[in-house]
View 1 (cartoon, rainbow, N blue to C red):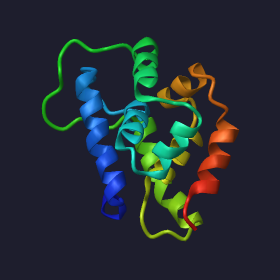
View 2: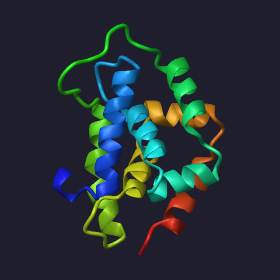
View 3: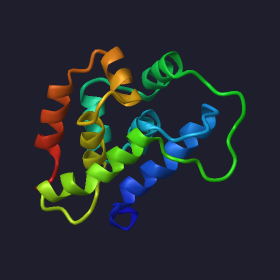
Length: 144
């Protein structure tokens, strides 16, 4: 699956790991993927999140409120949570619905918001994001 990630989506993975390290989390969850999607800035996901007025600082604050911060920065590889792993596994199917051979940022964000109760969804709800609006914007802005 990772070989199908676009350059922007690969950047999201790197940025998500940085966010997990900054928060001293010993895992990489959907909340870190959301932060990575925002930090990446060039992709459709970042553009859509900007459109609905979701910004890095407000998401970081909500992550700290909802999940908290750790005590010690992780070293080495950071494992994915089951929810983050499930979102990443849904991403190729979503890319396929757009007949896209690459997994792009919009596919990752769609996979997150189509998931079950994950931390990124809790953050978005805390920021009063209408998930149906977000989904519609992603579908409208995704290249066909």
